[in-house]
Image (cartoon, rainbow, N blue to C red; front, side, top):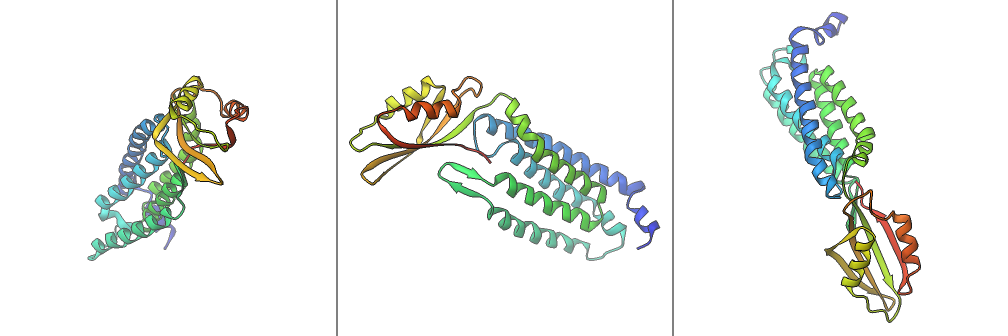
Length: 245
């Protein structure tokens, strides 16, 4: 390929096609972030970054199909429609790869944003493969910005935080859920009752549940909460972990 051939990808109608894809990608990112903020506000594992990345990649893979006449520099390809089957196989395979990095431990789920970013990278590769270089570059930049800056934005916006709490009671202790819930409420947390998992090990009762801070600014910090739990005569040990993605 000559220098003139490369310039062909950055001129005229090709830039217009890239601009159209870019607008779709940017709009999808913003709308995905909007939906993701609702989940983030509720203290769920998947938040603005995950929703934004998935929506953005979906828009990129859908929008570029509508610009098939510009694939591969606009070269005539009678069987160009078969390329969509290749993309379908790539996206499906990457989906399985992304699922492999998601780890669930009780109510705590990690790796969602990493899985979404892997899917975005596959979309970037597809755009590069068909010759939409400007769109691929923008998608890569938006992906980096989303993963690096959106967490700070989520933390600044009003929202709820969720803690994964495990309490191991001493032998002979008979805890009451209502009493534990009242103590949590005084610290600014709401116990999600349907998340309660009860186990019995080494003759000790173990409770594991999700505690949601209805207001992150007013709720007791996890470090202070740990001090209060450490002073309890009914507990043998405990763990407190933030639910994150």
